[in-house]
Length: 245
Ligand code: AMP
Image 1 (cartoon, rainbow, N blue to C red):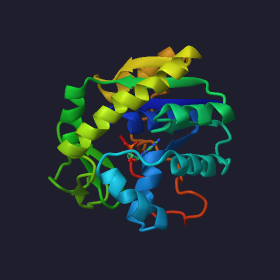
Image 2: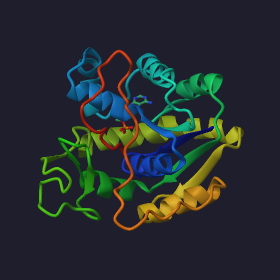
Image 3: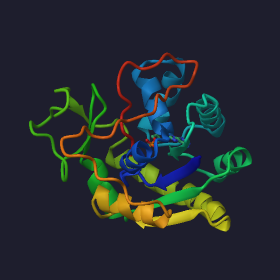
Image 4: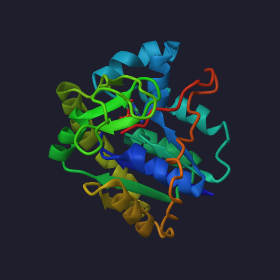
């Protein structure tokens, strides 16, 4: 059983790195941001409540976040463990989490703010299948159209200059104390998130004492995005989860 937390500012590659690790270790990737986005896209009561908060780049209230995480983890579909992304984001959430779960490692993806802006403002998402694109490093073959399903590529509602400024401020103010809490327990590995995804993944694995990832056989499909994320009270989505930051 392996339980990891992955932290990093928007655009640092938390979603990509979580999915790579989850697919290889057969653990479940849980993204709190994806759970909220699913609720917004599916017009649930919770979606209506969090939509404006998310669009402004602000944080959703701790009570709601904690109940979403608690509900998600009590689904117990994580036989081999989980990697949780986007949580905890403030000291209260960290204390709540550590009261309930032992953590094997916290991965901090380190990215300078200037690079965050460049990545986030060039990020696009397929409105149909959730595939993530970056117009700098990973642009679609046909502009505005998903390579996988042909769906329309859209900008996340919170990937704007204004919302990003709020998120960066919150991240530095609130998330750094969380890292300090984890560091006191010696859980944290900090990894430079500037290189390409494979290099970052290899470094994460090395720092966590995991064996190098097995290379996928030629022609094999990309790793599955394996987390059915909606809280138990919501119906299962009929689409792949969007990748988070
Ligand atoms: P993310 O995809 O992790 O960047 O999350 C997108 C948005 O969801 C954030 O800007 C917040 O509005 C909300 N959110 C996600 N995780 C949390 C959390 N742990 N605490 C508060 N709000 C969160």
